Length: 123
Image (cartoon, rainbow, N blue to C red; front, side, top):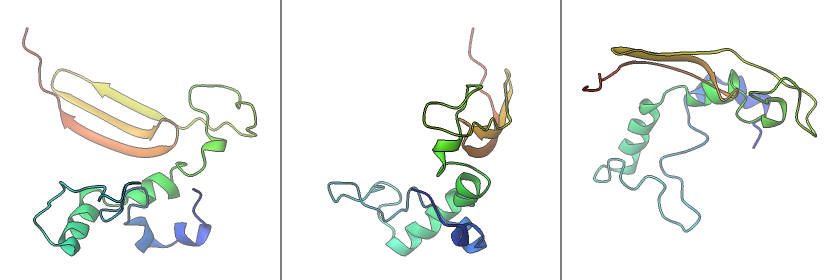
Protein backbone atom coordinates (compact mmCIF):
# COMPACT_ATOMS: atom_id res chain seq x y z
CA UNK A 1 0.00 0.00 0.00
CA UNK A 2 1.25 3.41 -0.91
CA UNK A 3 0.64 6.27 1.53
CA UNK A 4 -0.32 9.74 0.25
CA UNK A 5 2.00 12.73 0.56
CA UNK A 6 -0.22 14.52 3.08
CA UNK A 7 0.30 11.68 5.57
CA UNK A 8 4.05 11.69 4.97
CA UNK A 9 4.37 15.39 5.82
CA UNK A 10 2.46 14.98 9.10
CA UNK A 11 4.92 14.59 12.04
CA UNK A 12 2.20 12.97 14.18
CA UNK A 13 1.81 10.19 11.58
CA UNK A 14 5.58 9.60 11.69
CA UNK A 15 5.20 8.31 15.26
CA UNK A 16 2.79 5.54 14.30
CA UNK A 17 3.22 2.04 12.97
CA UNK A 18 1.09 1.67 9.85
CA UNK A 19 2.41 -1.84 9.23
CA UNK A 20 1.51 -3.34 12.56
CA UNK A 21 -0.83 -1.59 14.97
CA UNK A 22 -1.14 -3.23 18.38
CA UNK A 23 -4.92 -3.61 18.06
CA UNK A 24 -4.84 -4.93 14.48
CA UNK A 25 -6.36 -8.31 13.73
CA UNK A 26 -5.06 -11.34 11.87
CA UNK A 27 -7.14 -12.71 8.98
CA UNK A 28 -8.91 -15.12 11.36
CA UNK A 29 -9.98 -12.29 13.72
CA UNK A 30 -7.40 -12.94 16.47
CA UNK A 31 -5.40 -9.96 17.83
CA UNK A 32 -2.04 -9.72 16.05
CA UNK A 33 -0.14 -9.21 19.33
CA UNK A 34 -2.01 -11.18 22.00
CA UNK A 35 1.13 -11.71 24.10
CA UNK A 36 2.30 -8.10 24.14
CA UNK A 37 1.46 -7.06 27.71
CA UNK A 38 -1.78 -9.10 27.64
CA UNK A 39 -2.87 -8.13 31.16
CA UNK A 40 -2.72 -4.39 30.53
CA UNK A 41 -5.64 -2.38 29.09
CA UNK A 42 -5.60 -1.75 25.35
CA UNK A 43 -4.85 1.97 25.71
CA UNK A 44 -1.69 1.19 27.74
CA UNK A 45 -0.68 -1.51 25.22
CA UNK A 46 -1.01 1.07 22.42
CA UNK A 47 1.25 3.53 24.25
CA UNK A 48 3.84 0.85 25.00
CA UNK A 49 3.76 -0.40 21.40
CA UNK A 50 4.19 3.14 20.02
CA UNK A 51 7.18 3.80 22.28
CA UNK A 52 8.69 0.41 21.46
CA UNK A 53 9.43 1.56 17.93
CA UNK A 54 9.02 5.33 17.69
CA UNK A 55 9.23 6.90 14.26
CA UNK A 56 8.42 3.62 12.50
CA UNK A 57 6.39 5.34 9.78
CA UNK A 58 9.10 7.98 9.36
CA UNK A 59 11.87 5.42 8.80
CA UNK A 60 9.80 3.06 6.63
CA UNK A 61 7.70 5.46 4.54
CA UNK A 62 9.04 9.04 4.75
CA UNK A 63 12.78 8.49 4.27
CA UNK A 64 12.33 4.82 3.38
CA UNK A 65 10.74 3.22 0.34
CA UNK A 66 8.75 0.41 1.95
CA UNK A 67 5.55 1.50 0.19
CA UNK A 68 7.32 1.93 -3.18
CA UNK A 69 8.79 -1.49 -4.04
CA UNK A 70 8.43 -0.75 -7.75
CA UNK A 71 11.32 1.75 -7.64
CA UNK A 72 13.73 -0.15 -5.41
CA UNK A 73 15.64 -3.18 -6.61
CA UNK A 74 18.40 -3.98 -4.09
CA UNK A 75 21.31 -6.06 -5.28
CA UNK A 76 20.89 -5.30 -8.97
CA UNK A 77 22.31 -2.66 -11.27
CA UNK A 78 19.37 -2.57 -13.65
CA UNK A 79 15.63 -2.34 -12.98
CA UNK A 80 13.66 -5.58 -13.05
CA UNK A 81 11.08 -6.24 -15.76
CA UNK A 82 8.21 -3.77 -15.36
CA UNK A 83 10.23 -1.31 -13.26
CA UNK A 84 11.38 2.07 -14.49
CA UNK A 85 13.80 2.96 -11.70
CA UNK A 86 16.47 1.28 -9.62
CA UNK A 87 17.60 3.17 -6.54
CA UNK A 88 20.55 1.79 -4.60
CA UNK A 89 20.63 3.22 -1.07
CA UNK A 90 23.66 3.15 1.27
CA UNK A 91 23.93 0.50 3.98
CA UNK A 92 26.82 -0.27 6.30
CA UNK A 93 27.16 -2.97 8.93
CA UNK A 94 29.85 -4.36 11.20
CA UNK A 95 29.93 -7.37 13.50
CA UNK A 96 32.92 -7.75 15.78
CA UNK A 97 33.57 -9.85 18.86
CA UNK A 98 32.33 -7.15 21.24
CA UNK A 99 30.19 -4.73 19.24
CA UNK A 100 27.97 -4.78 16.17
CA UNK A 101 26.05 -2.10 14.31
CA UNK A 102 24.20 -1.30 11.13
CA UNK A 103 23.00 1.95 9.63
CA UNK A 104 21.23 2.58 6.35
CA UNK A 105 18.45 1.25 4.17
CA UNK A 106 17.90 -2.44 4.94
CA UNK A 107 16.97 -4.42 1.81
CA UNK A 108 17.08 -1.11 -0.04
CA UNK A 109 13.74 0.07 1.37
CA UNK A 110 13.61 0.48 5.17
CA UNK A 111 15.91 2.91 6.92
CA UNK A 112 17.18 1.77 10.29
CA UNK A 113 20.09 1.53 12.64
CA UNK A 114 21.20 -0.47 15.65
CA UNK A 115 24.20 -0.48 17.93
CA UNK A 116 24.56 -3.59 20.08
CA UNK A 117 26.90 -5.48 22.34
CA UNK A 118 27.89 -8.77 20.70
CA UNK A 119 28.13 -11.79 22.93
CA UNK A 120 31.44 -13.49 22.35
CA UNK A 121 31.00 -17.13 21.42
CA UNK A 122 32.87 -19.59 23.69
CA UNK A 123 35.66 -21.48 21.95
